[in-house]
Length: 379
Ligand SMILES: *[C@@H]1O[C@H](CO)[C@@H](O)[C@H](O)[C@H]1NC(C)=O
Ligand SMILES: *[C@@H]1O[C@H](CO)[C@@H](O)[C@H](O)[C@H]1NC(C)=O
Ligand SMILES: *[C@@H]1O[C@H](CO)[C@@H](O)[C@H](O)[C@H]1NC(C)=O
Ligand SMILES: *[C@@H]1O[C@H](CO)[C@@H](O)[C@H](O)[C@H]1NC(C)=O
Ligand SMILES: *[C@@H]1O[C@H](CO)[C@@H](O)[C@H](O)[C@H]1NC(C)=O
Ligand SMILES: *[C@@H]1O[C@H](CO)[C@@H](O)[C@H](O)[C@H]1NC(C)=O
Ligand SMILES: *[C@@H]1O[C@H](CO)[C@@H](O)[C@H](O)[C@H]1NC(C)=O
Ligand SMILES: *[C@@H]1O[C@H](CO)[C@@H](O)[C@H](O)[C@H]1NC(C)=O
Ligand SMILES: *[C@@H]1O[C@H](CO)[C@@H](O)[C@H](O)[C@H]1NC(C)=O
Image 1 (cartoon, rainbow, N blue to C red):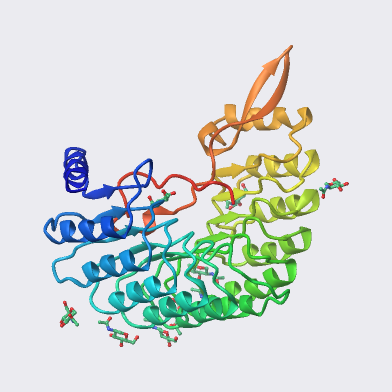
Image 2: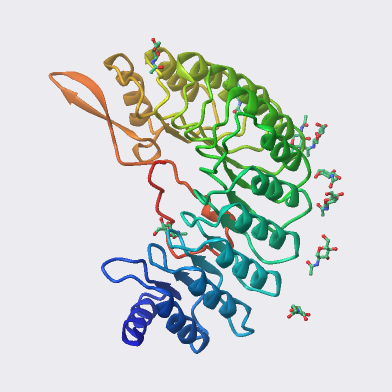
């Protein structure tokens, strides 16, 4: 273990980085490993980032890491515990230690079943002044109580810039929790990035959310992927965006806005007050009418620079419009997820590997890890 760590640290240093990457592969860290790691980091004060995703660290290991965070010499800014076995007690330990003067700025706990109780501990932690800028809690079995608690604590001025509570455990069909988020967003706040993917958001819930977004706000990035938004929901978004809106990135992937929704969005995109620069409408059952309308809005003067449309009906009829956008430089190929190919003198669209960047890294100062955070797998 010691050997592995020294090797990894040497490699990191050689690469000019202070992030230890111990993502679980064949060898998986368990709690004993976490203990050794914590001891090691205590004696190596230069490490600022730790990626121990996909290991077997449980509450006990999380406690060790938490103790390390409290250590006066610890300068850890970035901790990635994605997909370990941390539960409520581990989340509590981390939260308790973060309440005191911790240096940590990014905490990623996605894929750990911290549950409602863990979520409550984390929200209480956010109530106390601290350093945290990004909290990632995707698929953590958060229930409505802790989701509400997070929204409520965020109403008071915070340092948090990015919150991801995608894939919560919400059994009820009711969406009052979105009212709390709406109220929170209506207050002058610091939150720039909000991820509410796979959270059962309907048009009705979205309407509630936009009420808060219409008031003064800070949000730049709204992620609503894998929800139940249809064309009606896009009307609420359009009303929002034609006002003095700060929203720059909108992710509506895997909803069902269809042609009508795409046309509604296209219309608002050309309004002078629409600040949107990146839009993803992948997998929304949009056909030629909606897609050509989006292409047309780009030809007119919209602020949009990135557009993602895969997973819709990419018929031959619209390939010419997208080909022109790409050839003219209006939509550079790396800013979209389709590419044009020619066969027998005809043009077709095919899926390329580009995706909407899931993190707005410029909001993390300093960046959580060197280089761009890789895009997430589709959820
Ligand atoms: C936290 O940090 C501040 C400023 O660095 C210091 O004044 C304060 O005593 C610290 N508190 C604790 C509990 O360490
Ligand atoms: C903590 O928060 C309170 C209330 O929001 C604020 O008055 C105080 O200045 C904050 N302290 C620090 C050290 O950020
Ligand atoms: C902090 O939030 C309160 C209301 O929650 C508001 O009155 C106050 O102006 C805010 N302060 C700053 C600096 O945003
Ligand atoms: C909200 O922001 C506006 C513009 O920045 C400012 O005039 C207003 O005082 C702020 N309100 C609160 C409650 O901080
Ligand atoms: C804040 O909201 C009010 C009322 O919606 C609006 O008149 C004002 O222009 C907004 N201020 C900013 C800075 O967006
Ligand atoms: C729109 O927002 C900008 C910057 O926040 C502000 O300067 C401008 O006055 C606002 N306009 C209206 C009509 O609210
Ligand atoms: C769009 O073009 C029109 C006319 O050319 C111009 O008046 C308007 O300011 C432009 N809007 C933007 C957002 O560039
Ligand atoms: C997709 O949209 C078409 C209409 O354009 C509709 O007939 C069809 O049922 C939709 N498919 C799904 C899966 O919603
Ligand atoms: C944290 O780890 C997960 C899984 O390895 C990875 O997908 C994610 O990008 C990492 N976060 C950052 C900021 O690198």
